[in-house]
Image (cartoon, rainbow, N blue to C red; front, side):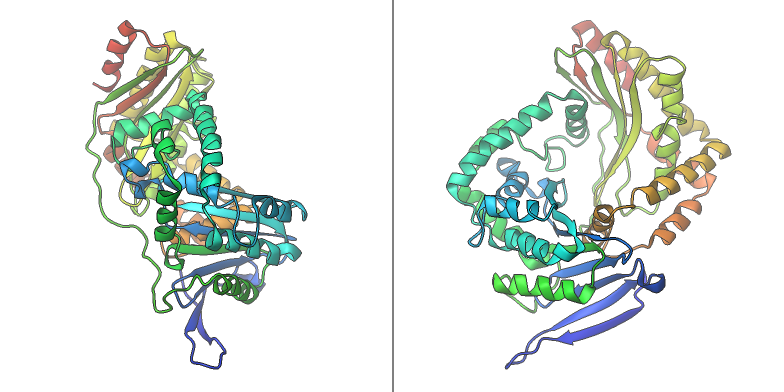
Length: 459
């Protein structure tokens, strides 16, 4: 989170041109792990992390738009647009886009979340200029043709159907709706059959133009890369597309605000003829900017983050009541969720929920032991490092950090911050989060008599 140097570079031209600002955010040893950032005139940010020892590079563009930016009638538009940006530009057809990356053995994909969207390509370092040109062309020159919208509608409806066929996935959307209601954060990222069918090419095109200008974008690149070369290539691609409409524009700031989640004791049931019942028991968590998030991460790891966690030991290891049981956190700009998931036979739902609720209450009241906290800190440190062992993960880290926090933290600083979490901090956040009255989401063949008893789990 430190800025060790700053430079400016003027664009050469026959007329006066605006200036780009470059900073070294993290200075790595011998250049390894160095993170640099350049802000171009027009508000586009470019962040790179250099790893000379690898032969690959991952190039991504993060957009400051997610499903929470949609109105009810636009629900699903962000994800729809993610699909459409692969359908062609004035320079490339959909086949041209995919075949260009396939021809060099690379991989290309995208994902949409509630607060951001990312498009990326992973290639050999020598093919990075191609990846930059293709992904930048997609982001700046998408045509959004009506025929493509109609064709892709079918693919998206199939994706919605595929998600609904996976209750272990679908239950998390149900839990978000249970906690957040009919709000942008509570609605599904994919949208619904009705909203997707109602979206038109014109509405999606207007959404694209509003949210994909350079001030809303962060370019992130990690691997065997040269920062200055990446900046020149990205700048050339955006200028070629005429994307810089206002060279005095500043980048959009990270999301802020404070949203309280007051939901407690709500139960939502979705009857399905499945072999298992899928349940999520949870309560409001912490925003991703909350300083207590480090302590919550340690708590989450000890409570339901691995085979030695309390929930795994009590529910699966000792009693065999579930194959999959874990806890998780979701942090947004202004609020968060904490949840416990379990999949079990329908006739064991009440036993599983009672065990989970008892553990939550026990930890809220008495906290975790020092041994549990120490083990969780070590586990979290190890998983953090192991999760950053490829260029794709590094690109995700620096891109999301710039978009969501506006700053970078080195891996060493992250490990030190995790190690600095104290038992008192973990016990305090356990009281604050786990001490709240929970809500419950259930998908499965739950009968009426069972349904009435499920409210006892959140009483």
